[in-house]
Length: 275
Image (cartoon, rainbow, N blue to C red; front, side):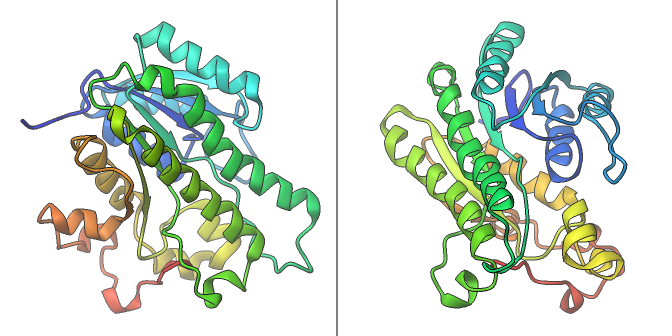
């Protein structure tokens, strides 16, 4: 049976822009229901889009959207988003842990406040949003948790450069793999998904390397296409995996990736910091 995301309900943290929005728009093309839990209620001077403009784009792409203005760090907001998804669409089929904060400072330069922010949004947010949605996921015919976080690699070269950020992203992955183990017998899939190369996002532009690195990065649509393939898979057959975007596409016979970085020599693409 070929699965689609038609009438499936996705609860996503963040999603006002970037990779999260790209995944939402790919799902919307099937007629999915997208519930966004995000903070950007009004335009930000340095970031494109708000939760409301994202909802408009989702509807224009063919999906249904519900914008829940809130913070994944706030337990009441998380519970409110879950309740709103169930009330509006009758349940939750997918939790997408997309919201993330990045700071690549070394340990001496990383402020406690910024460390706490990364832990609260990335690790705690992933755990709490997934946890809150579990009762609804258990009622779904094909439930998935998907976290946009890297495979865990304990090589010192990945641990040393930015300990705080690595802890926060690995925390997302550990929580996700933990849910996979805890609920495997009940059919809830939980996987992580991460790209081999950098992706054209605000983080790449503003934090990692500006316009030159953006040129050497792939578009968010590569992430969206891979996520779609994961989320339409059989939950009982694909869980507890640290998936790589390009490998997911290759497993489905998609090996020509030129459209995700038109005119860029593959050798010139910038490798992701965790791979």
